[in-house]
Amino acid sequence: MIWIMPHTKRKGVIRGDLSIPGQALIDRFLMSLPVIEQGEASPAVALLEGATGALGLETSLPPPPNSSINAESSAGQRASPDGGGLDAARVAESIASAGILQIDSSAPVLENILRTLQRLEAATTKSAEDISKVVSKLEELSTSVQNLQTDTTKKFEKVDKDISSLQATSATMVKDRMFLQRKIEQLENFNRRLNIRVLNFPKLSLTTPMDLFKIYLIEILKMPVESIPPSNKIYYLPKKLENSSPKELDLINLTGLLETSQEEIQYRGTLLVSFVFEQDLNMIMTIFFCFSQSLFLGEKIWIFPDVIKSTQERRKFFLTMREETIKIGATCLLSYPCKCFVKYQGTKYVYFVPEQLHSFLDEKKLIHS
Image (cartoon, rainbow, N blue to C red; front, side, top):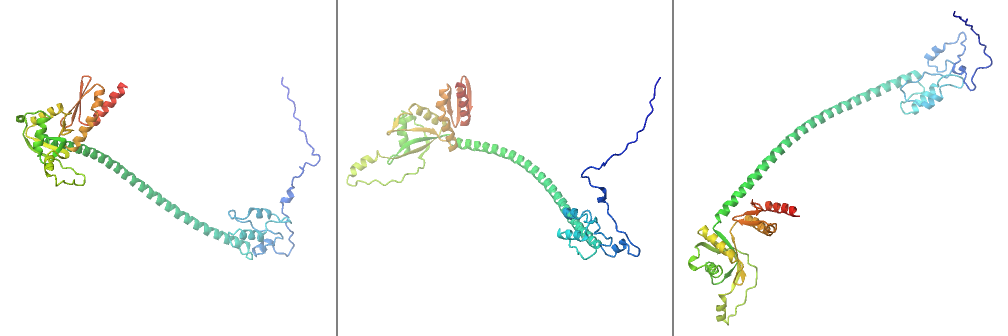
């Protein structure tokens, strides 16, 4: 069985004052209106006629929400000492002192508000027009910048393609130039293949270059007179003579001057000898290496094949690395016009450029170290 208890309602009794200490009463937020006696004009009618104090209170309409009125002054003037509303004159003074609008305090409040709204509307319209112009200009600038960026990108792409094409063309031209230089060098060296250069060869005043060269072949290279090869031409290469004061001649002792003039060496220079046959040149070069340390008229003579200057520089570079090549246990042979043969540990290497031999030596030095 289930027992149900009846519900009993209790009535409460308010005891004492329930107000919270310091709490404002609601009466202060209420506005007391004056009593209108019979025969007096209605405050609304008086307000429309321009009387601001017709209600018996210092009241006015509130300013528009967007107006820039000093918040502190308006907040302090919301309530008049007698419980009224806002002071219209003070509101007008606040608007005027803010420097926003010039308000005529003698005119009715509604007219001032209307003028204020009209001026604000005009200023807002003008600002909106200015903003629209700025936005349109910005859009035009943005469009022009995008177009410029597109054109610049296309131009850069074209420049990149042109650069790649120029690089390929330049590489081809460099290869062609090197090929042509090598061909020209070969042709010039081929035209000089029958010539030799005799360095530090003396020049006598009363002896021709051909006779003096024959004396060198007979006395130094020990060649018989009948074995001397024929030559096309023999002459000294031009040489810049140093400026020196001429020697004074002893005119009194003419006999001694004539006897010593035959042995006097004017200077030493490079003698160019051109042979008729290539085998004669090879024979002279082979015999020279056998007597290269012999002296002729007091000094050593050196014989080299006649090649152009660029070939001479490469030959000289090859010769400077000859000792280093021998030190690593290899043999080095320089052939005409400028070809270096190196034999290292049973392997033969051929170099046309000295830089190749230099790299080879650096690699072997690293291995040995």
